[in-house]
Image (cartoon, rainbow, N blue to C red):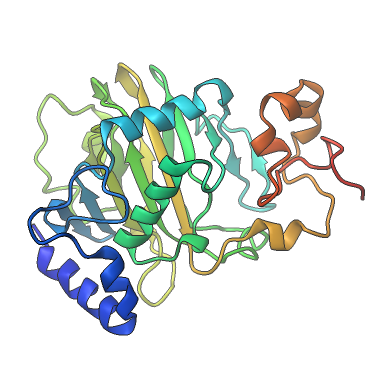
Length: 306
C-alpha cells in the first residue's frame, strides 16, 4: 500500500505549525528527491508495511556512498553487541544477540550529520530525541533474537523516556538470511514468501535487508503505551554478511551530558575489563566520549574524579 497522501498530510500539518519547517524541506519544483539529499525525503518512495505494528519502508534512503562511509567509520572499532538487562538496565552479554557493533558520535562528520537531519525530517521526531547511530555487523550465523526496543527497567527510562521509534538502515545487501522479522505482526500470515526467504523469516512478517533501504517502526502506541506487536529480531545470516545502522528515538530529549556532567561513573559493568584491554585508547568515542558527549566508561578510563 502506497501512502504518499498520508505523508503529504503530515508535511502540511508540520508546515502549518512551523512555517520554517516547510521551507527547510521543500524540493525544487523541477525534480524529485534523490538518494543522498540532505534533509529531503521523497514520500513516493515510502511504503506502509503494517499498522500492527506501525511500520514503514523507505526505499533508498541512503546512497551507496553513505552506506559505505558508515561501514568505514565502524570497521576497526567493533565490539561484541550487548543487551539491556530487564531488571537492572545494565548492558550485559547474551547469546540472544551475537552481532558486533559500535556507536558513532552524534554529528561525527558531515555525512553523519546530514543522515541525522534526514531521519528527523522523515520521522517528524526531533534530532535531540535520538541516540547516537549504532553500526552493527552480522557474520554467517549471527542473529538477534526477537526483542522489544522499549525498556522494561526504570533506570533506562529516566533519560529520554521510552524509545518511541526505531529506524533500521541497511548498509549492505545480504545474499540470504538476515531479514528483520516481526513475529507478532498482523501481516505474518498473509505475506507471500518463496524460497528466497530464510526459514526464520517465515515465522513472522519479514523485511529483507537491501542496501540503502530504511525501516521505521514504532514501539509505542499513539497513546504512549507499549506496543507488544513491535517485537522484532534479526534472522541469522545464511550467506554473505549484514551491515546495518540503528537510530533509536525517544519520547523526549536524549542528552547524556546533562545527566553525567557532574558524575564520574561507568555505564557498563564491563568497563574496567575493557579499560584494562586498552579500549580507552582504541575506542575513545565510546569509552571516554567527546567534548559534547561523555563516554560510557569515564571512571575506568580515569578521565574524571569521583
